[in-house]
Image (cartoon, rainbow, N blue to C red; front, side):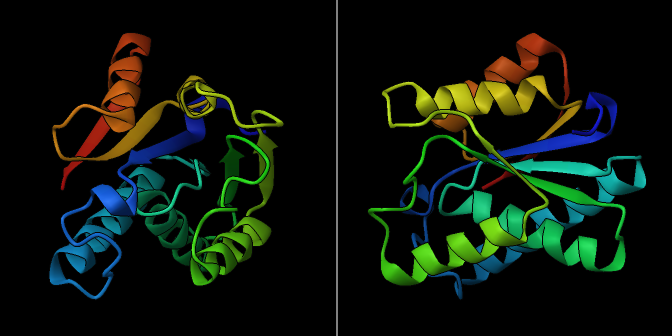
Length: 166
């Protein structure tokens, strides 16, 4: 794996928590995707070469797709899928499961944080990503939840945070 100094991870809300939910044609969603892509490009310019994505539906997949687009022009970029447990997308709609599996296959590395679902598997995945990174990009709406917990953990760990308001 890449050194922490050249690694960036991401946290953000699942689609159900976003104001537009699963409607990715909503102008607010398109604007958020553009901001995520801009942040991923900015950290690349600062020396980041390895990106870690938690693979949740919503903002995580937006981030993964943005980094894959960036990698198309920058082959030194690597992408790691940090999967919290086997079967993460099993309850998702079929089209979203296909998207997940396509992105997972296109990642350079896959890290399975836990074999089965447990109440803390998402938190363990998030801590793994932060501990392996020097910068965190966060799409955050200010409300309590997993994204807030990940941000607070990143603050305690002293890594750089780029916050994108949702």
